[in-house]
Length: 181
Image 1: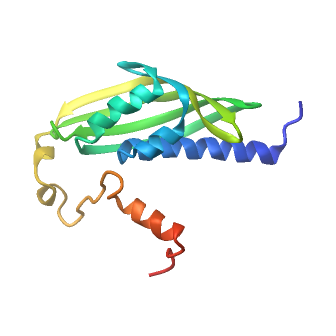
Image 2 (image 1 turned 90 degrees about the vertical axis):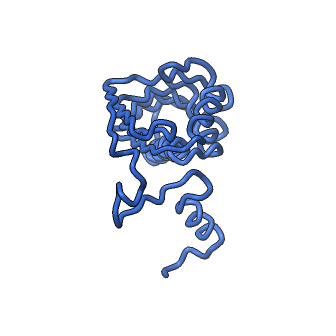
């Protein structure tokens, strides 16, 4: 079977965009972004959670909406396409500090091992297994300080959806108001 190289590039880019949308969904507690990364019947084996992706999203959102700081990044994305199915391995780095214990920092490194499926022209996760390669938890009492003390003039302004600055920009661009300032 001959593969169209342009279509393969488009498929890989759609898969990468889906992975990035997942990270935004987690970091911004953006339910729509999270749900759009998975098929409705998807599964997720995510450490303590092993079940439906919908169930994972529900329990994750309860924790995410409590606040705290989170940063997730994906890299070293390997995509092997086989028609409407793809085997995808993505390395991730995540740094988390929950609002309930801001001095408790967790650093996670691992890989998302995903089966992606293309349905009606769209790529999403059909099955995810999270492989943890490194987990480090530590207490950092200074993280419990207020933002002004912690960050000085570089105040963090990352927020949950829809208050984060990216959603304002997306709204402006979608309405045709995203020109130069």
